[in-house]
Amino acid sequence: STDLVNDSSPQLGGDLDVNGKKIKFPDLTGSVNNILYFGTGDDLLIYHLNDINYIQCENARTLRFQYWTGSGNETLANFIPNGAVQLYHNDTKTFETTNEGATFDTGSSSCVVRLTSNTDAVTVLQGFNSDFYLKGPSGGNLILYANGNEDAIKCIPNGAVELYHNGNRQVFTIDGGMNWQDSKKAEFGNSGDLKIYHESNVNYIYGATNTPIAFMVNA
Image (tube, rainbow, N blue to C red; front, top):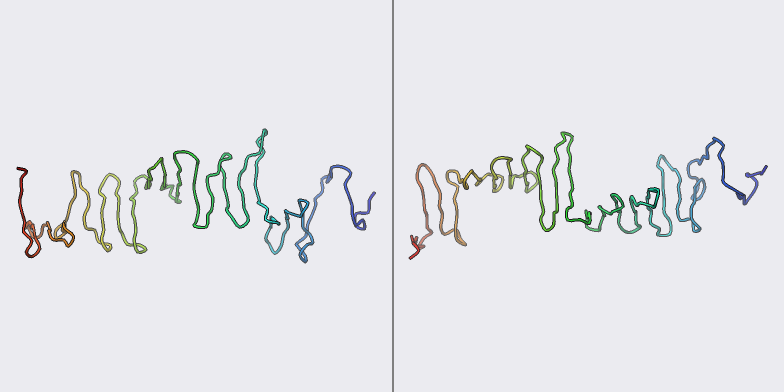
């Protein structure tokens, strides 16, 4: 029998069997009490304080979560001091924070980020080889906003692609080409010197002042 309370340097002679009991640590008191320490330099600390559970690394050590596969260790996540948070899939790093935001990298020809709403609608951002894809959910529009909530481009499934200016639709695709509604102009030239448009049952080909309009054939 050992008096652990009064022994200033107790040591185990073998594995500790808790015999169906608990090892309990109260809330942190002071700066060093009621903490579980690991490492020769007290590099890893586990403790509880003010309703928060802490896993704390000291001495600029990386915090790593691993899984034992039965034949080796598989990394799940790294938390690097003054650096990145890295997340892994099947022991391959696929996500890493940077000083600009975050990087997704699968190490293969395709990298996919899926955004899922509570209606099971999925929007996909995909980098594939040298191409980039932005895919809207099945049956849903793909809309690009400017100025907060101002329509800029709208892609309608099985339908038109619409282009907007200052939130107002200007032109849209149709089966076979493009459509400009009444008074919507197709302009050509650095200063819009040539305009083609339709208005009030009249078709206009309009040239700027002192700008000739020439009709040519390939001679």
